[in-house]
Image (cartoon, rainbow, N blue to C red; front, side, top):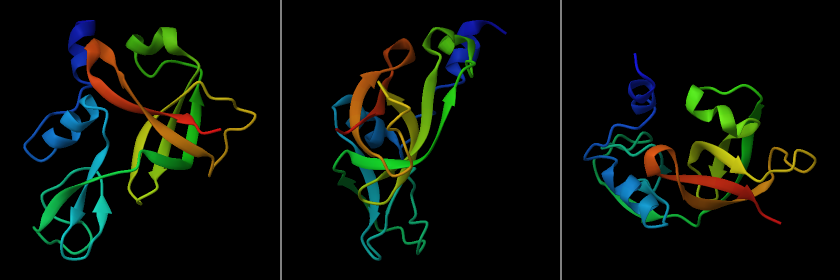
Length: 139
């Protein structure tokens, strides 16, 4: 299997349900689904609310602020494409509005990086210039 084939496996599959999410990231915005019935805000994007199963789901803009829910610093690359990036932090970020997502924390300081540490979104380009959202510590 070629390196390009394995790198392609790292990209998300774009569907009708998640296309707006990725388009928003490309435009420097962060969005999530919100249920019109129970008002639950959630990620990943889905056709039905995971809280009440309603199909009355729409998009809502998020503040791009959150905090560290959990994290790990990698000293070995998860994939060959990340070999020049070690060490790097992968974190579960709890957004101010409630949803959680997995991302990287850029320019971190392990002396101050803790569960609960405030973060802000940074919109960048990942492998092959695919738009991604990463985070950095708020000072």
